[in-house]
Length: 252
Length: 252
Image (cartoon, rainbow over the protein chains, first blue to last red):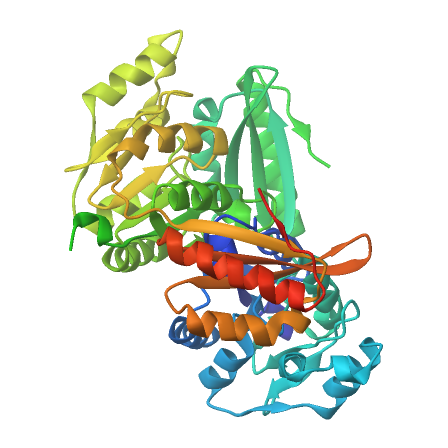
């Protein structure tokens, strides 16, 4: 088996009371889902948990044992509710120490060195054995330790951090995807779709209903890593849709 | 202790490959977070998992033991990838049986009784011991069994379902929240915020940075169930902000 055939899995762990209270709407899960899929990494799970130390430690340890990659967002700022770095260090059983390069970067970011107060210095701490993740937006770095990637919660910063580490991440064969939309309710196609899924157990067939101008329609997504199989299945799907009086259109 | 003093907890469980692939952006977690918070129910966790039977069964059992309420979204349509009802029945160790009232509702929804084919009849199945959740949008019901509420994934349908069950849900004291925004970076206030949090351990103080017209600002959210304590803490927070040269503004 070549290395390509390995499947790489991931989980996104969103840490923050503001998401669970509804005050802030998470945008990181969806963004990372797209990027990971494009990188040949399968996002298997996403979780949102509160700013509770024991819970974060427990969940980080659970997830890093289960998936190839864990990406956390949130909780790495300068205030008392920013406890992600402390929790990840505790999960790995290592010290959290001030990183001289991180201090240099923070200093460069402030007009007056005195602005780097004790609270802001906390943002320069990295667990022993971890390496920095660059923050081109506001200097304070994230970090990687083992298979855990700790990033900011602010989407603009998180996205810049992820773009910086993207090159380090190993992925498997990219998941290919084709979608046919049709003005047929999914209930009409359900039997045919089930049969198609049975014939193509190596592909993943999803059915997503929608309404357009008051008419029910369905988007059928077929995903898999083998282009030839995917194309054949899409051909059979289009035929099935036409047989039911539909006019399938491929989504871009 | 009056019943009011009990804390009611909840988890939202989003089931669907389309969220994890990035094809569909979840909107249900944020919407439910707001509604649950308003209902005096604490959303402690949200999870997104794939359409994998064993995984769904395991997670439903984990979460229903841990929280007062579990709200699932997704996977209750007519196609082969709609396996939530089967999984929830398996998690509870009960049969999934066709509900005559659900069949009546589905029949009323189709022009021709023949349109209620075998695939669509699957949507009328409810686990033994469960009760229906009305679907005023497209007839096919959700259901409640024990502390698990199974709802559709399409936001418009999920929202209508939740509005219908809202009256059945018991909540505790509502979580009150006040927010002061100020044109000060959170790093400048961090020490004061930490001290404030220490003095008000019964309140939850969150700090959320933002940029407005290129200037760094912070929204400080204080939450708690005791209005008098919350108001006093907000007063102290405003004073602290003014002491640092800020001009705090209360968010609506």
